[in-house]
Image (cartoon, rainbow, N blue to C red; front, side, top):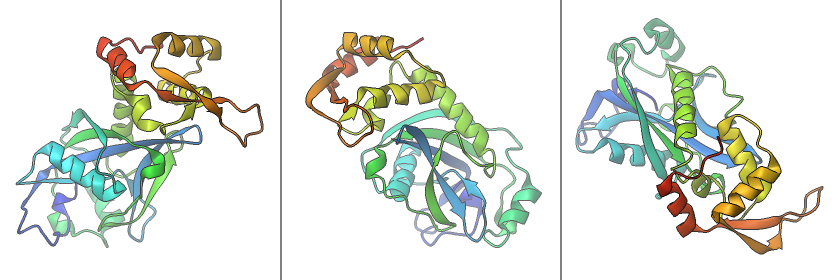
Amino acid sequence: MPDTGNLIEQPDEEQFPLLPQLTLDCIILGFHEDQLRVLLLRWKDTQEWSLPGGPVRQNESVDAAAYRILKERTGLDQIFLQQFHVFGDVARYNQEEIKKKLKHVVDPEKWYERAVSIGYYALVDYSRVSPTPDAFTEECQWWDIQDIPQLLFDHNHIISVALQALRVQLSWQPVGYNLLPEQFTMPELQRLYETILGRTLDPRNFHRKIQGLGIVERLETRRTGGAHKAPYLYRFNKAQYEAMLTEGNLSFS
C-alpha cells in the first residue's frame, strides 16, 4: 500500500495517528525456479500494480513500520530487512494520472501532493510466504524481476535502485542465506548470484570460489526428479558464511 497515508482513512487511524507525508516502500524479494521475484500488489478493480508499503504511524519507528507492513503482506515474523535509500523528489508521481487511475479507490481530496518514502528491501524464503493484499488492493502476487510491468508512482525506479544496492552489498549481506531454502544445489546458488548481478558466471570458477571460501557444506543426498544427473544438495555453513561477509570477501567481480 504505497504512499497511502493520504488516502481513505484506515479504521485505526485515531488510535494510531499516521504521518501521511512519511511513507515506506518495500521491495520483497524471493527466489523460485531460478528466478528472482518481487512481490507486487494490484489495486482494486484495476490492472494497476505497485510495491507494498504505507505510512509510518506516530507511535512507531520506521523500522518497526517496515516490519509491520512486511508481516501483513507475507505472514512472516522473521525477515531480513535492509534500508537502502530515501526517495524525496518533489514530484514523485503525476497527480492527475493517479487520481484518474485510482479515483474509485482513493479520496482525491485526501491525496497529498508530496510524500517522502524510505526504501527497504526484504529477503525472504519464497516457500514460506503467504502473499496477502491490503485494504486498497485485491491481489498480491510474485513477479519475475525481469518481467515487471509499468508500476504506479515511481516504483519501477525504486526497484531499480534496490537492485543496484543489493549488487553493491552482495559481498557483505547474507543474500543467499535468506533467499535460498535450507538445502539447495550449486547450480541454484550460482543462478541466484547471476540473477542479482545480471551476468553469467563460469560454473567451474564459481564452484571453486564457493568451495574455497568454505561457506557451504555438501550433503550426502542429491536433488532427484530432474531431467539431468541429480546434483548434490548443499547447505550454508552459517558461521563461516558470516565470517566471510564480515570481511567482505564474498565478491564475484
